[in-house]
Image (cartoon, rainbow, N blue to C red; front, side):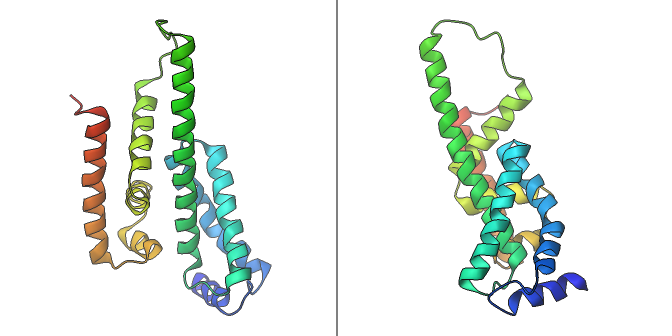
Length: 185
C-alpha cells in the first residue's frame, strides 16, 4: 500500500524524504481538507487558503520538530483549528458590521433579507464557534463524511471514546443553539 509507505517515509527524518512524498500527501488529502473547511467557514476561497496554510505548517513543523506519527491527522487537526479561528474572527466581524448597519439604518427595513438556508448556516457556524474546539471538530468532520475511525485517528482518541465525544458535542451544540436562538417550531 503506497500511502503506508509514504507515512513510513515521513517518519524517517527531520525533513520529508522527498518533495514527492509531501506532494503525494498533499494530493491525497487536500481536496477533503478543503471540502471540510468549506462546510465550516462557508467560503471556498477562504477554505483553500486555510488548507494551504495547514499543509505549509505541516512542512514547517516537520522541518523544525522532526517526525510526525500521523501527518494526515496533524494536517486535518491543524486545518480544523485554523477554520475555527477564522470562524470566530468572521463571527466577530459580522457582529461589528451588523451593529454598524443597525446604527446607520435604525428603523429602516432591510429589503435584501438573506435566504433562510443561509441564515441557518450562519446560526450553525455561530454555535460551533462557541463550542470547545474538539467538539466542533467532531461535529464538522462527522457531517463532512469522515468515518468514526478517521475522526478518532485525527483526534488521537480510541473509537470507544469518540462515541462519548460525539454524544457530548451534539448535546452541547443543542444546548448552545437553544440558548442563542430558542427552540425551532
